[in-house]
Length: 254
Image 1: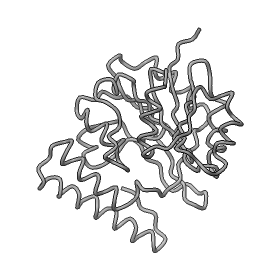
Image 2: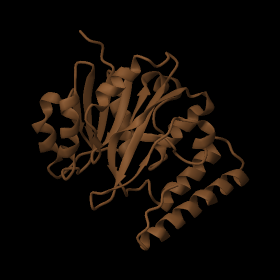
Image 3: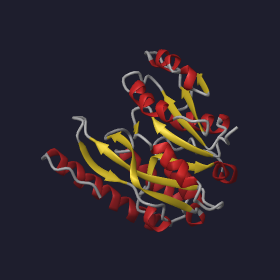
Image 4: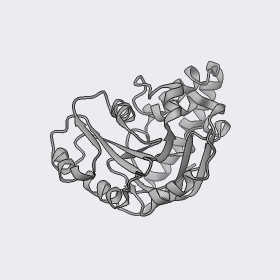
């Protein structure tokens, strides 16, 4: 029997509008080396019907109230059997051959590597691509914000064994906090290609997310409040400029 390499965790809550599209991008790629885990937060729309439709492809699923996406992801980590864990949003699309490319890549990474990421393309509400983002993990660069593409990235199980699960005190940026917790000791690898399509918007693009970013720098990286405030204002300025340009029809990303 082939060793289980990758567990894909999807957190859902009233995701009927997008979940089937997401599953249709994943299911054809599943092999004996991969598994699919779906953790639902007690959906009241057609989400559970969609999950049942694909139940033969789902290794584990549960539907119960939770404390948000990071609570669901933590539950997924606990039941996943793969050496590597991938988190995909219910409204994301995993590009064809992404899992095959990752499985090939995993044969080449070092035993001490705990993160393998790639790129994602961001799409507007009109369905048109806006920009592509994603770079290899670099602690100094990530102090200025999440530079890696977290959707579709692989986290080695040893990372969670070593530093724990997602911190539920962060509602928007706990994925960023998890990596910053390991900091400059995190060894990573990178695939210079797009593996996920994602729609713009959501809480990660908000003033609230920038506030959490400040708290993470202050509490996890142990920056002084002066350094934390300085970097907070840099991100706040970029966010304000981006949205000001967006109002006049200019898409800007930095």
